[in-house]
Image 1 (cartoon, rainbow, N blue to C red):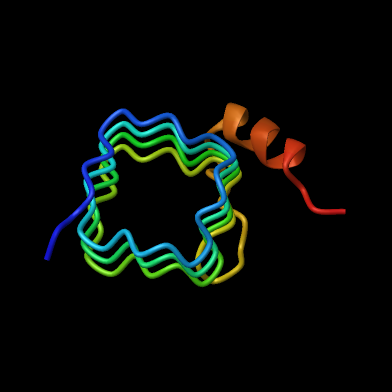
Image 2: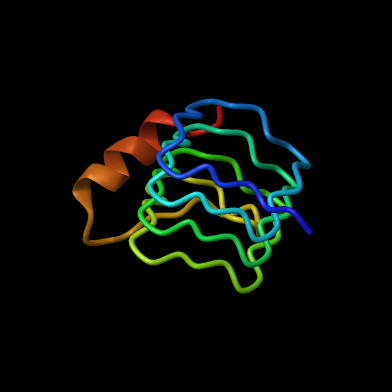
Length: 100
Protein backbone atom coordinates (compact mmCIF):
# COMPACT_ATOMS: atom_id res chain seq x y z
CA UNK A 1 0.00 0.00 0.00
CA UNK A 2 1.34 3.44 -0.94
CA UNK A 3 1.08 6.18 1.66
CA UNK A 4 1.19 9.93 1.19
CA UNK A 5 4.09 11.99 2.53
CA UNK A 6 2.66 15.44 3.21
CA UNK A 7 5.33 16.62 5.65
CA UNK A 8 5.17 20.44 6.00
CA UNK A 9 2.28 20.62 3.50
CA UNK A 10 0.23 23.83 3.58
CA UNK A 11 -3.41 22.74 3.38
CA UNK A 12 -5.21 25.40 5.40
CA UNK A 13 -8.99 25.27 4.85
CA UNK A 14 -8.58 22.32 2.45
CA UNK A 15 -11.64 20.16 1.83
CA UNK A 16 -10.49 16.63 2.64
CA UNK A 17 -13.84 15.21 3.77
CA UNK A 18 -13.80 11.43 3.42
CA UNK A 19 -10.15 11.39 2.27
CA UNK A 20 -8.15 8.20 2.76
CA UNK A 21 -4.99 9.36 4.54
CA UNK A 22 -4.35 6.05 6.30
CA UNK A 23 -0.74 5.89 7.53
CA UNK A 24 0.05 9.19 5.76
CA UNK A 25 2.91 11.31 7.03
CA UNK A 26 1.51 14.74 7.92
CA UNK A 27 4.32 15.88 10.22
CA UNK A 28 4.09 19.65 10.83
CA UNK A 29 1.41 19.99 8.13
CA UNK A 30 -0.57 23.23 8.25
CA UNK A 31 -4.24 22.22 8.10
CA UNK A 32 -5.97 24.95 10.12
CA UNK A 33 -9.71 25.10 9.39
CA UNK A 34 -9.47 22.04 7.09
CA UNK A 35 -12.59 19.93 6.52
CA UNK A 36 -11.57 16.39 7.51
CA UNK A 37 -15.09 15.11 8.21
CA UNK A 38 -15.11 11.32 7.99
CA UNK A 39 -11.46 11.18 6.85
CA UNK A 40 -9.49 7.97 7.38
CA UNK A 41 -6.43 9.00 9.40
CA UNK A 42 -5.75 5.55 10.89
CA UNK A 43 -2.08 5.29 11.79
CA UNK A 44 -1.29 8.70 10.26
CA UNK A 45 1.60 10.67 11.74
CA UNK A 46 0.21 14.10 12.65
CA UNK A 47 3.13 15.06 14.92
CA UNK A 48 3.32 18.83 15.22
CA UNK A 49 0.48 19.35 12.74
CA UNK A 50 -1.63 22.51 12.91
CA UNK A 51 -5.28 21.44 13.03
CA UNK A 52 -6.62 24.59 14.69
CA UNK A 53 -10.29 24.99 13.88
CA UNK A 54 -10.33 21.86 11.69
CA UNK A 55 -13.50 19.77 11.46
CA UNK A 56 -12.68 16.14 12.30
CA UNK A 57 -16.29 15.03 12.87
CA UNK A 58 -16.45 11.28 12.28
CA UNK A 59 -12.75 11.06 11.35
CA UNK A 60 -10.93 7.83 12.24
CA UNK A 61 -7.80 8.59 14.30
CA UNK A 62 -7.17 5.03 15.50
CA UNK A 63 -3.45 4.66 16.27
CA UNK A 64 -2.67 8.09 14.77
CA UNK A 65 0.45 9.77 16.15
CA UNK A 66 -0.71 13.04 17.72
CA UNK A 67 2.41 14.23 19.58
CA UNK A 68 2.40 18.02 19.64
CA UNK A 69 -0.64 18.30 17.33
CA UNK A 70 -2.47 21.63 17.78
CA UNK A 71 -6.21 20.96 18.01
CA UNK A 72 -7.19 24.40 19.41
CA UNK A 73 -10.80 25.06 18.43
CA UNK A 74 -11.01 21.89 16.30
CA UNK A 75 -14.18 19.81 16.19
CA UNK A 76 -13.10 16.36 17.31
CA UNK A 77 -14.36 13.03 15.84
CA UNK A 78 -17.17 12.85 18.41
CA UNK A 79 -18.45 16.30 17.33
CA UNK A 80 -17.20 18.13 20.45
CA UNK A 81 -15.04 21.23 20.04
CA UNK A 82 -11.56 20.85 21.55
CA UNK A 83 -10.78 23.26 24.36
CA UNK A 84 -7.75 23.19 26.61
CA UNK A 85 -8.79 24.97 29.82
CA UNK A 86 -5.22 26.19 30.35
CA UNK A 87 -4.78 27.56 26.83
CA UNK A 88 -6.10 31.10 26.44
CA UNK A 89 -5.07 31.30 22.78
CA UNK A 90 -6.92 28.04 22.09
CA UNK A 91 -10.05 29.51 23.66
CA UNK A 92 -9.74 32.60 21.45
CA UNK A 93 -9.43 30.41 18.34
CA UNK A 94 -12.36 28.25 19.46
CA UNK A 95 -14.57 31.33 19.79
CA UNK A 96 -13.54 32.47 16.32
CA UNK A 97 -14.70 29.13 14.82
CA UNK A 98 -17.87 28.73 16.90
CA UNK A 99 -20.85 27.63 14.88
CA UNK A 100 -23.81 29.97 14.99
